[in-house]
Image 1 (tube, rainbow over the protein chains, first blue to last red):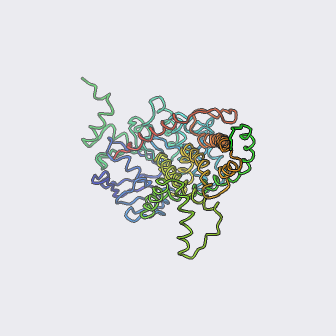
Image 2: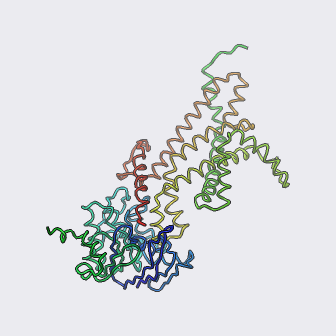
Image 3: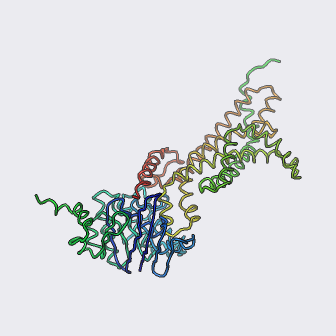
Length: 250
Length: 264
């Protein structure tokens, strides 16, 4: 279970997160929606401390970190409990697909090379890249790179996988293959937090949807409820923009 | 005394000069090795903004980049023993060769540190983030992810430095080291056929440079193999020259796009 309490973050004078509370149950898929600048990516990056929150506590399964007094060790321990899939993939450019997937296993989890390779090959098969084990990221399409990124996250067997707009950098034709992989692993009961602009996907895959704006959580709930019957005015307004089929009535 | 240009001397002197090639190469290797270690050590404080050390490394780099190598050699050879005398260390018996290697090493270190610094900065910020997200420590991220990529970016510049160093070794003769140029001086003085000696000397430097260039190109292609679009195609002695420029500029653009993408 993941619990965020009172997460605050400022860039200079601007407070982009104004005390976020969020609870994610084990096995739950949470989608975070919201306009650009709402703080959703920052929130996600706070969970693995790529951004340092100015205040609040982060709790992942058995580990609690108080952002006010977190040292290197605590941050390191926190990061071991999550994995991230980036908008720009961020695969290690000098490593092949397989090496990308097993790098964390070997260096961080200290798994033996043979064992790691076996796991890596299985995972790449799973994301449909069994034929690309030795390809470098520069030789892969965006969609393929992102699937390697997902395999890399899965390899670590984290408590939670954080997806930071995983399909935003992809052209429309490649979005599908990545979403398909994410949906497949969602069904396996892996806890995931997904920041996304893919409304239909969020509705389809998430068990819980969070709508953020201006550094606060405006509304949250099950997708069926939030999408069809939003309570807050701001949520209605936002969803209207993203579901144009409802707004075309003349 | 009548002087007649005799081309035969050019060929005659080549093997004689080659007999001192090992010394020249030793100076190059020693200076570059020293330079690599110093360069890395000096680049780190600037990359990680360590107070005091950062300023010191800036002064060091300015000095070695801003003064002629010849002057540096003189300063270290004549000045260092005097300074060390003050703390009762006697280096007057240390062979000149060590001074030369040490000074040229310090000189190379200044340039290498700048090269490393630029290369590390050029590695995409997302790479570090990915390393952290995987659970690596700062040290692991630097040695396993950043440094190998930075080296790949730095090799072309580094190759230039090595070849420049080959030629700078010729300054060692001013301190009396009998490397190739020193040897050429004395051969020329003996026979009075200076021009022929210098021609053979130039030919040797040129050939060694070309060879070094080839070897370094191979290293470059090996280190940058991940930057190529297509899978490895074997070619004769790695002579197929594909400038990695396209790939590099494309990566730099990517970086530009990525940095501001995290909405605040």
